[in-house]
Length: 321
Image 1: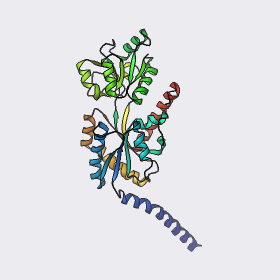
Image 2: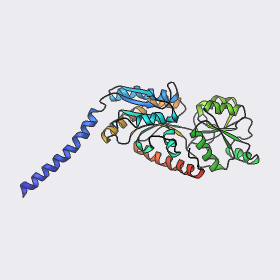
Image 3: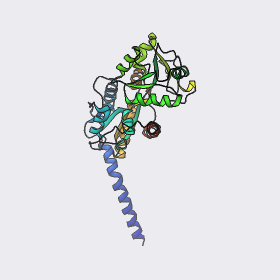
Image 4: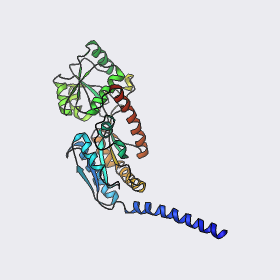
């Protein structure tokens, strides 16, 4: 009887060891070839520059080559479709922004769903400003809402991207703002529309409008962050003004959902090492962004919360594309 128990114990121990060994080997052998960071935008832009800064530092941490591939088009769909067809082994990462999630909740994603990807790391958050032009008589959100109600149907907002459209519609729903959408093909066109008074409002990140705010040609009436921005300390948050709104864009890294846990753990550790380095944090802040924090589990919780918010808005407004 004792022999049988010992034999059974040995067998169980052997099975456990067999289960552990492949995982340990997978972690030890990763990466076995070049790691690719796929960027859904063309070279030279802010997202591309951030990705290249990460790639350079990540190569040193992983002790292997890390390259950036630009696959623009389809509002991030081209890059996402490319990545989702690659092996789920941690050698292909997509570095993207909020569009990956928003395309999914609005039905714009084609050939993939958001659940095909697993969050790896939140790199940075992109603060959102509600901006008006100098012609519009409003210096804060309440004044803007009151003015819009005095001239119903007369205020227009520029929507150069899906994120700007959804953010503005969320603001309208929260505040009672009366404004009509005018679509534009780029953020630059949207800002030009404000300067020409073709549109009176736009949701924008700080960098494209900062000099125009300083000159007085544009005015920011609120920022949707938890605290005021260091680079724009004069702009009050929505929460300071009585509106519970602290949401914006983000830049993050994802891998395929079926990536083995040991590989995912090693890659996460390497990426967080890079993200939290002083050099990377300085580069992120220089772009007017808010530093990403937390591990991938915290990022997953953040994503789940964001998805619920946008899904509710999309259902309420019936704005599925």
